[in-house]
Length: 316
Image (cartoon, rainbow, N blue to C red; front, side, top):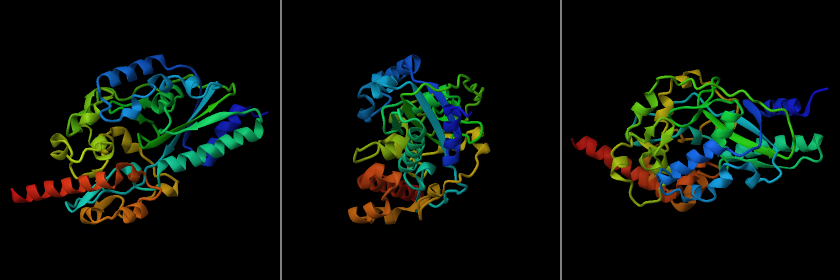
């Protein structure tokens, strides 16, 4: 007879997840301490939502009191396309090329949860993606999906770091994965050395205040900080530099999830078209896209900064 745990594993892969691990729901003491230190160093910048209830992020029972097990999944989102090398266009982070990953992940997680409930009527749980106060990467490491690279992203042997993570907290006792993947970064420093603003201030520690991705997505200031604006390197939304240089991303595989295929002009966006967007056109263009995170004002601020940088370069 196939165990419930094995049925969950098989169903997760059938739904389209690429990796799955199951671990006991318990407090993350060491990881929680590192989070608190990161917050104390003000490395989260203006992301005040991370400050709220940090203890909940490291204790799954505070998020879902009945939690006994955590099903952790990874979904490969890599598609084999490249940015255009054109000063009139702005590069967009790979994760935002297609449909909003929150929607795709939640749909698949809810399908998996519904399956669990169909074979175990007493099952209760909570579906989580990164909008929930949960330490996705820490649980992925605990579940044996990969290790944390020096750029602070999860790295898997099979798909590199091009993966989205999600969880289901369950009130069921399951069979648990106990073997964690060894850190395979070794002495490599490619991600630290490649970051144009030195945002990776120590191995596995990112200062958001110096990060291009944070500045172009999360920062709501009317103007980008000078250190950021002088080092945009063509990035309009997000930044993939530390992942692009990672040797483990040579092992990427194209995803089978069609919704992660790039939308029109979502790899490299025309800067003039971005600046000409009205609120209505913006809402239409980025409906069900992760790019709505930056708001129209942020996207146009970034586009204006890129145009200014290009003009200054041409005048030299």
